[in-house]
Length: 413
Image (cartoon, rainbow, N blue to C red; front, side, top):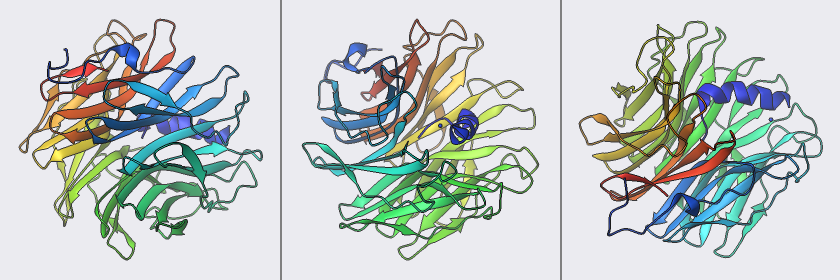
């Protein structure tokens, strides 16, 4: 999933155009994370075991196209794996992979979107069969004939091999953004109706960023809505086995004009234990971390650290989320330091409270020229988590980043 405090702005522009590891664990080095060309960013990862993880995102090729990328970890290092590029490889082409999920080692799905020849944004679904990635037919509810037609997938979850959900948004004829939910039944993908809490009129937005399933009859997707007053609002939907329904969520920024709250990551351990994370803007115009917990009946806002502070100008944001157990969860993102550097952020839930845990900062910490950000997170166990994102190199280019948690400390992988 990708940063929303900046993503909303970036998405609007895109629519107009687009400590060391423990001795017991494997040894890693920063060079073990491939960077295909000038700029690379990772948005999502998933781990089925200590020796099998995937990460997806995009890179910029030599011609200037944004190209979907897939990296595979098999126990000792990350390697790049070829993936289809349906959007083309020319200067103005784009193709983004935003999320990945694996029901098994030989069965993985990656979703995102690309631009076709008509300049429409088209849903992209790729499948890994244990040997290679192939493109799979995807519904396009907005159409594919014009630049104004947008279909974009941001999240995927598979509670079973023949039961997967992909979420995102698509536009309607009025230009509104509508929640999109696609279902895989083992034979094909089809569109399933989803609520649009903020309506379907021009200017309204309903966007799903992440989805998690604890069973075939319990899936939760989260994102944001834009209401008629111009407020960005937390959004959560639930699949109850028969249909998608809207869940009421706290709105820490209120519903005032230009209020700002959004959810990006979600993970469900059971039908009565889910977490969602993201960010919101307070009355001082500071951006703060946000964590919500679902108990099966209601969502409640849970206090989190804000390492950037809570006064005007502060900026904290959470994006990735994963739980190894009810009392062992991680949330990752970024914050800005007092030197204006953008720094990796990792928060840990121990069953009672969220706390800030130190992370490496491969991109440096000295000034606003230093950037580190984490977007994706997957924990195979309490001593095996990967967080992915990007850093800036000395020439200001974004580079893939992967950090590993060994149960004691985070290290750069």
